Length: 256
Image 1: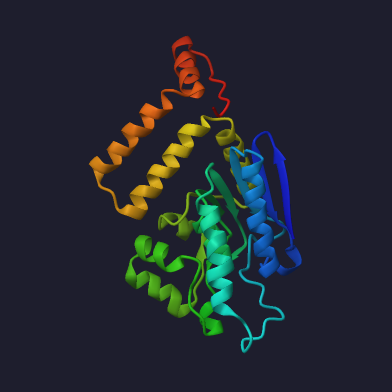
Image 2: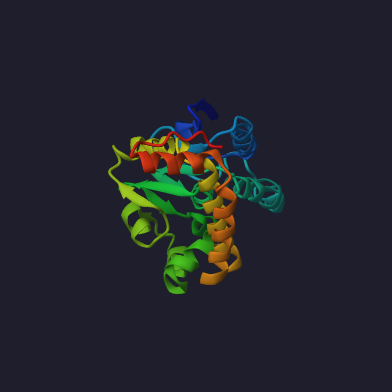
């Protein structure tokens, strides 16, 4: 179900069950977490997450799940939330392709990813209203922050799905692209990041997370930037960047 490839610093993780629109069962979530562990062990300088077939991910695979015996708390607390935290805290830049159906846990994976390019034909949201359940995977936090209370509850109450263009205009994800271009564009962005100054990107990722999670103000964020910049000054990539700029040539970063 989860395919893994590693090439030139990019770990490509593929949800590969197109017949069920890449819906994720319990075993799939464990496989996905293991793929991110493998990417870190391989020293990935960027991760590309995508889905095979017409959809990114149609949410949780509930085929064969009986509501009377389903351990919902265990599924969410012990498996899904640790996976999403693993994705969000991956040390290198992460990228995802959102196309077709992006529902439930699929939206959660996109929320946890750094950069998300969305197909103009994508449909994003949660079908939980039809199941008697509520939005999960961090959707409440992101939607309420970006859309406001009224728009968020409208989406939840009605079960309406957002288009790719609407989601990007609302500030939920990175950019919207034609469906036939989005995968190649995202892969190019991942390769470009993998060839860049990895330590600097990791520092920026940590600073952005701190600003978001700790609600830091301008001067607190600037203090983090200053400390990061001072630490980066000792790296080979920093010296290479300066030398390349002064020599008017293209830098060759090594990630160190």
